[in-house]
Image 1 (cartoon, rainbow, N blue to C red):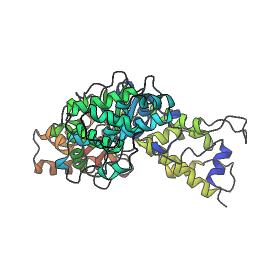
Image 2: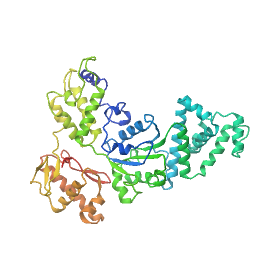
Image 3: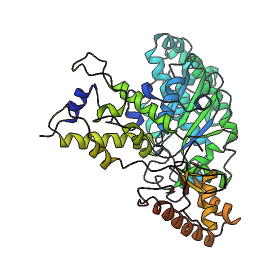
Amino acid sequence: MPVPIRRWLEVQGFERNPFEYYEADREELLASYFVEPEWFEALRGDPRQPASAVLFAPRGYGKTSQRLQIARLCGLEAQPPALVVQITDYKWLPADLTTLTARDYLRHITDQACRQLWEHCQRNPELHSRFHGQPYALLRLHALRYWAAPPSYRLRLPEPALDPEIVAELARTFRLPAASGDARMLVEQFAQHYEGLSDSDLQSELLELAGMGGFVSLYILLDRTDEDQWTVHNPEMVLARLQPLISDLPVLEHPGYAFKFFLPDTLQSLFAERRVGRVGERPPSYLLRWRDHDLLAMLARRLQAYSQPAGRVTRAARVNRFQDLCERDGDADQRLVRAAAGSPRRMIQLARELVEQHCTRIDNAEARIPPDLLNSVIPLPVPLLSLDAEGFVCFDGQRDEKVQLTEMERKVLTELWRQRGKLISKRDLTHAIYGKSEPNDIEALEKIVKRLRHKLALHRNLTEEQCRYVEYVRQTGYRLVNYDPGQ
């Protein structure tokens, strides 16, 4: 009878299943095994001196984990904190994207920020008293939220707790026709004032109210831009959604604001090709790529975070390596990392598959993963590709003169090697090879790449799927993978 996964993991020393989830926003212990890329501090920035930035990464490489870590470190855990607004749902965007402007984004951001600010004040008696002790500030907060909220939601917004006498006094001060001390009517009338403000004035108003709530700046984190049915395989649609905001430097560089974009790397070349704003310079951009030792550290920390200390329940030692779950001594961790090809998500998926298959094959919870299962789920590591100083193909550092490439195949591989790890659009790659980019040239490039992929796999006695070096990203271009990062 198969052993339940939970029972097997308990016997091995785990409190919970470390492989149950691989979506960052479902991982409660993410902070325990988060590995910072070398540029993470620059991407995160300082809430006291906020600055916008863009992160590009392939799917499954950890954009969301970067976003969640920044939200945690720069939000309420920071001293002083930023008011963090996370945008991961884009259903509020207009159906006709040709009408979309940065103002639409500001309205949505203001709606989310005012809601969070109000809820924060409700949880903090001191802040609650501060706002209620300043009727004008309370009116501004409610009116700004009313202005920003979708019309269908406005009637459900809370009414400010203002005495009728104060309502009447505020109405006289601002020459508003609020009658009978009606606080809701006063809010509605005052909200009209925001319609005529510039984007800059709106940002300043929101920042000032956030400051009253104890926040020194606003961090706007935009993620999951390519994960609905319209954008999952359509970088052009993602670009259409983002361009009005990411091209508006006055909004992005407004004092007290940091806009952080977590974007698929399919957009990096598209931004350059379409000359979208000044992305890469203002705001600066970063490319998320993991080295093997980063992934090994990530895996080890994850196993340690989910495993229990020695002496509890089964007295099993804390798990430090995936190899600890396998029979004999070996290189299971390195094989997981190599097979993941730079993707933390893929690494956890493979580990999960190993554990699930193992538990269906055993009837003893103490049995560890055997070599034959490891070999069936994770084939032997693909040799790492590099080019030597003379342009010859090398595998694991050894020149392989059997790989005979044509001049055009060598040009393509050399350009991919020059930009290794980076996604290159078909147009850019064609231009680098031919000096131009016509439809016929792109078609010729596709044939060259097909022959190149076949030759690289043929001399390793593997199929193209097992031994892939030139990865195709749908509707975008090519990326060199399984290359030697040390070369």
